[in-house]
Each structure stands twice: as C-alpha cells, then as structure tokens.
Image 1 (cartoon, rainbow, N blue to C red):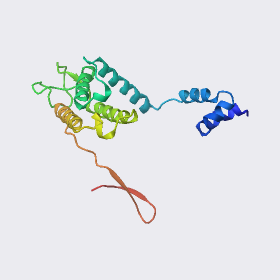
Image 2 (image 1 turned 90 degrees about the horizontal axis):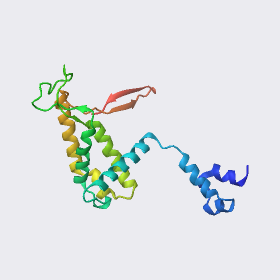
Image 3 (image 1 turned 60 degrees about the vertical axis):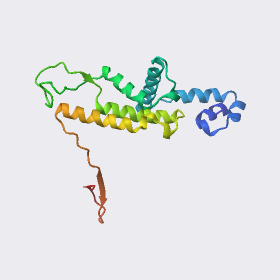
Length: 185
C-alpha cells in the first residue's frame, strides 16, 4: 500500500504534516469524513437545528442565535402546530375524552407531545454542540418543560387516555446466575 493510501486508511491518526508530505492527504481525509453517513438521529438533529435557525432568521426583525431565549422556542413550538397530524379535541367537542371517536370533527391538528419532546431533546443537544453554554441553553429552560408537560396532559385528556409514567425495570442477578426483572421501587 502506498503512503497516500495508508493515510486514508489510518484517517485522523496521522498528523496533517504527514498528509501534506504524501501528496494532499488532508483533502482526501476531508472527503472521506464527508462520505461517512450520519446516523438518523444526527441527520434529524442537523435538520431541526437548521429549521430553527431559519425560523429565527425569518422573524421581523431577525433574531440572532445569541439573542434567542425560551420565549422564541415556545413561539417556534406553537408555530409548528400548524404542520401537526395529531387530532386534539377541544373541550366542547362531542368526542372530547374519547379514545376512538366514531366520526370526524373540526378540532385542530397539532404536533404530538412525543414529537415535540424529542425535538426539544435534539435541539438542546445541537445548541451545545454549536457552541452554546449549558447554563444559557433556551431549550433546557423550565418554561419549556412546563409547556411540554401541559401539552402532554392536555393531549392525553382530549383523547381520554391518562398519562402514566412507565416504571423502569431493574435486573437482579440471582446467586445461581439467572437473571430476572424486578420493578424498581
């Protein structure tokens, strides 16, 4: 194997001076890094981050990321409701509280709580990966957690499904080596 090929295989373990001396290995390393496909989570996180950035740029006046706060995040979450696919029955609707309504109604479609919760998790991580400080992260704000809790509770009530937090399971190892699951207390 030539030195040039060896640089590509070894990737980032070689210094940039070695790559330059073997005929442009830096460019090849850069191309190789771009060809590595992102995981589904990383791709979605990047898309979400870009969408939020575009949302801030479209505000009048545009909002710089450094000026972004939890109010901007809440406005963004409410803005996303117009693209939702989850029927949320209103208090006066005949189907309010029914798990399987027998017919259509005019109640709005909104973003599902689980989708919003996952979105906030990805944006919280992206904020810090893009240089934001954890203590100033608008996606980790208490007002965001309260909003998500209210959305979860109202959607569960509208569908007639009480939200119950799942208990985590704990694995206990018996003396004979068998494993069994025991509920955590």
